[in-house]
Amino acid sequence: MNNFTETEERQALRKAVYDFGSKYGHEYYLKVAREGGHTTEVWDEAGKLGYMGVAVPEEYGGGGGGIGDLAAVCEELCAAGTPLLLMVVSPAICGTVIARYGTDEQKQHWLPRFATGELRMAFAITEPDAGSNSHKITTTARQDGDDWVLNGQKVFISGVDEAEAVLVVGRTEDARTGKLKPALFIVPTDAPGFEAQHIPMDIVSADKQFTLFFDNLRLPKNALVGESTDTALLQLFAGLNPERIMGAAFSLGLARLALNKATEYAKTRNVWGAPIGSHQGIAHPLAQIKVEIELAKLMTQKAAALYEAGDDMGAGEAANMAKYAAAEAAVHAVDQAVHTHGGNGLATEYGLGAMIAAVRVGRIAPVSREMILNFVAQHSLDLPKSY
Image (cartoon, rainbow, N blue to C red):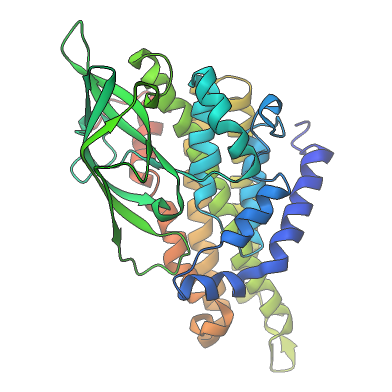
C-alpha cells in the first residue's frame, strides 16, 4: 500500500470479486436465506476461482497474500449483496491460526483445502456465562493417555451445520502450576460427544447460529493446535486481530450495499418534478455516510497493513477502531437508506428491512462496541481499567 492507495493487484481483485458476487446479487441471497438455505454455490465457485485462498501461503496452494486481500474479498462480496459470514471465521481465523501455529502435519492436512474453499471450519470461543471474558471460559480438556477429553458448552457459533470441523478454544491444566491455561483444538463436527443445537434468530441470514455441547468428547493427540499448549495465548491473538479486520470489512461491504441502494433510489425517485436526491435533506445524510465509510475503510486497511507487518499491538488497536467505525457506518447507512426510500424502505422488494438486523450484529459481534471502547480507553489513552 502506498500513499493510501491499494495496489493495482488488489484493486483488480476487488473488481473481479464484486463482478462475481453481482452475478448472484442481493435478491438471490435473500431468497436463499428466507428459504432456510445456504449460499453453497457462491462459496464453492468463489473457492474454485481462488478467492477463499488468497491469504493461504503459496506452498499450500493459496494466493500467498495477506489479511488485507482476504478482507477485500469479504467486503466486495458483501457490497455485491452476497455476504458470506463464514469467511470471517473459516479462512481468516482458523486458516490464520493453523498457518501460523499448526504442526507440519496440520498444515499439510488443512491448508490446501482452505485454499480451494473445499473446507469450512467454524470457530468456538463464546460461552453462555463468559461473554467477552475469555478468562472465564469453562470448556476444559484433560489428557487421558494419548487422547484429550473435552467437556463444555459454546453459544452463538456460526455456520456449524456447514462446517467439517470447529476450532474450539478451551482450557487445560498446567502440569507445573495446576492452573488452567488456554488451548485450541480442531474438533470434527461428526465426533461422538459433539452436539449442535440451532438457535432460531430473527435475522434474515443464510448463516445459522448454534449452541454446542461437548460431552466427554474424545480427541486424538494431534487435535491440539501446535506441539503444546504453551503457544495457545499467541494463537488466540493471532486469530482475533484478523477476526476484527474481517468484521470491519463485512460491515463496510454492507454499508456500501445500503448506500448504493439509497443513492440509486435518490437519483430515480422523482417528486415535485425533480429527483429526491436534489434535496439537501436527502443528499447531505447520504454524503455523510460516504465520509464515514471511507474513513472506516482507511482504518481497516491500516489495521491489515500493521498485521501483515507483524505489529500485533498496533494492529490490535487499529483493528478494534476499524471494527467499531465500520459497524457504526453500516448501521447509519442502512438507517438512512430506509429513510431515503420512505415506505419502500420496509418493502420486501427493496431488501433493506432485512438489513436492519443484519448490520446491528456488527455492533455486538465478534466483540461489542463497549468492549472496544474499553480497549481504546485502557491501551490507547492509558486510562485505568474499568472492568
